[in-house]
Length: 428
Picture (cartoon, rainbow, N blue to C red):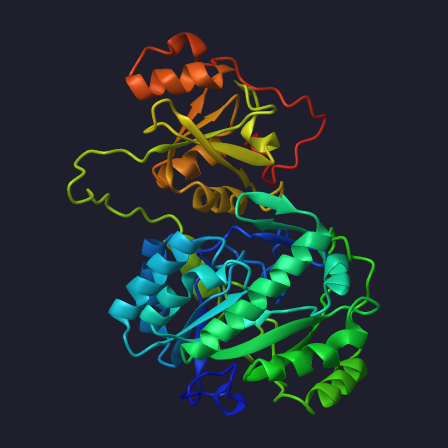
């Protein structure tokens, strides 16, 4: 496998070859106790944050702009800000578009590995050459201290069971990737007092599985996370861990803890404001709707609902922590799943992330929503309907084209807050 032009896998390339991460994957299927993706600062370099969320169409538009301005980009990656395979439709659509338009570009993914085994053949089909997996424990007892929950399929699992299944799927992912000729790097977040004494065992296990490169990545303190009280490990500690792990597997020594929207050379610590503006501009672009072959004028089947108990549409969008998804093409309409939403904060970024989470829905039913989220969701072709009533009655009316004007809510929502942060609660 050629690594000459990959700045992460080849330290000699990081001075001359750059990478671009396309932030098309906002959802995540695990909650790490060290992670808080609600906060974004342009001067902060750490995984899991992005200044915008792009659709596959927008990602290509943005990539075209970057390629016109930079002649040293050799790698296109998808690294979140959630997990690529918690967002498989967006990830695969982006990979397909990139591979067709830029066939010589190296394709790279960064994942936790939980859902990856289901998409190994697609990874190979789109010629993804490099995958980075984040594996923080090979002992489930340690893993359950690291993860608050793991969403596997449609179930949210507690830490103990979730950590076991996550490890099983990570090992399955590595084996499947190596069978398909993909280079694998493993990132281990070094958490003082949690897994720091376990790192050499992780390295040993990764070597046994044929992993190509190992990265001891120091924990970055994240305000608002369950581990916010932990201190960042000292450079001397990381050096000792790298030395111990090197007995088993080659080490990555030049990691920069890249953001989900990183672009340029690894050593470019100051953001390119022109490219950041290009990303935000791309996030506003709308793709001309395509009519599926054989399905003329067929609308998307899913409708998202903000509900407190699953019976009524009775929740303001700014308050909702999750949305219930229904398929109205079924007879009768059928509940599909609940989807976790990004939390308050981050301004418009929250609503762009939401659009990515429900991009297969044509309608969002809520009891209230501010002008900003409605405007942004409309850019993605998602209509926001302010209603109040029984879910079944409203869905029946929408499906059959009935008059539901009596259920429309006309009075403005009052959040009853004495102060207004204007940072994503949905009241703007």
